[in-house]
Length: 292
Image 1 (cartoon, rainbow, N blue to C red):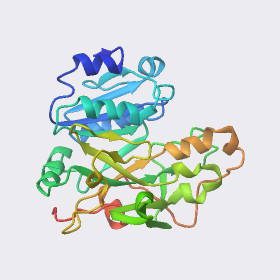
Image 2 (cartoon, rainbow, N blue to C red):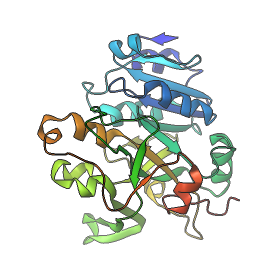
Image 3 (tube, helix red, strand yellow):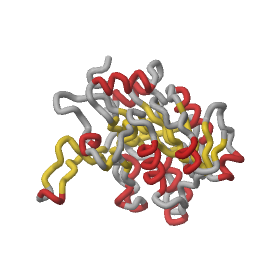
């Protein structure tokens, strides 16, 4: 089914916004749209919604069962964060909402054999209402051969070179906020001359349990409940996830200001991404916490 706008979904799509797990995929272009949708359907989301401009919906091979919504995230006021915030406000409280772009893939521990609903049921039992994640930038080995910066099978990533710093509160003398961190590194760090500073952070609250008064900020944090931005429980380390993403590589490969100055994305810590949650856990990008 195709909805003419996000307003249409919010006013008439009560089944879409019902309690459960909901994935919002915002397509900026045609890169890996089908693969992105297939990946999140395979994770077991109750509903997967594709929000994209008309020309993407007309051209992409959209899998059966995906809800399609005409919505151009590039031109809509507030972009992804504004649209996701409206869904968070309109969804039934308790609904878990994921938001990401095409050519971005959500991973969590053991996702090959356990559904996102099973993982979140355990996560909620630990009194957690959001899933902290890190964005892992993927890139092709040869940008000249893949001029859009995306690839389906020859993906590379940085295995090291990451660091974290505490998030500080300007209203309290810049004191560190409890259990909140910023993560930096990877492709964005190596290519920082081409990446605006506000887009260099890698930490991300990828899944949020909907409740009244919540919204998603442009830097992937949750406004309205500081606890949802923490990386761990107060009592022990909890589950975390990762979003592997070609989005930065796409931008670097297609932006006129950067594409002529970048001849390779490869770095000294580049390794092949094998597409498994085990590799991401072994490299320290995510962990199972107390979930075995």
